[in-house]
Image 1 (cartoon, rainbow, N blue to C red):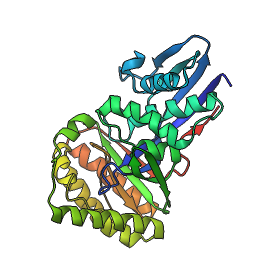
Image 2 (image 1 turned 90 degrees about the vertical axis):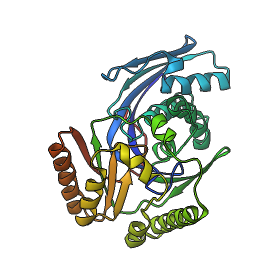
Image 3 (image 1 turned 60 degrees about the horizontal axis):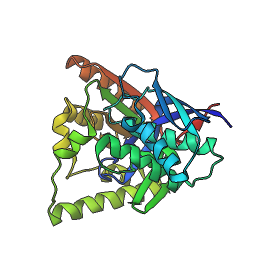
Length: 306
């Protein structure tokens, strides 16, 4: 195989209380990537979107991943990559993870599927490290595995695929940028034992609710007392969006990744669409452009389209 095309989905990291360990793939938006294996050593990157991302391989998230794979295999061939990003950088919807995971998955397919998914996560984390300064897999894992994933450990890589409840996801992306690296810098470096215990209870309850398809338990567990109170100040209208979503019947939700996107989970498409309309209206009144997505949980993750 010499060429491959991929659709690489957006992801929602943390799922409110599971900072750096929980993530979920959704259907829209999706990046489009094309990878070719060539006889010339090295990596060539080309973007067809308008985001102005670097095309120097050592400065590009996808490029870093491919260089890592080439180094690991002592490969005498190279890769050419064309990326059309539909997941806006800095959106909180896993834009950098999509590039990193797509590069890893595409290269693996071209090389004859020689790596395990855990190994692909390992390579893709190099891209996330380039983007944010931290090797984290909460977006990468659901992108590669599909559905909802738990990162039990990133070193060594230990990913657990969870159940995908029959729920609807509403996500709004106000058209401002919050860099993951900036959003990490404002976090507290220590938490009280009392807060840690409450947070552990929320995480355990959320995982149990996901596994049991218990919507009520999921809703009661979608609470974050450590990260959200700090990061929410970076997101205009966050409190209003969350309050009105809950009034509309959402199970719960919060910041998607590092923001500024906000997501909510609902039991029906009707509620999810009502929340979508409300989110768009709130940002329109605030004079902030926004994009709103309604999706089921994406069980497949990355899809090969050609």
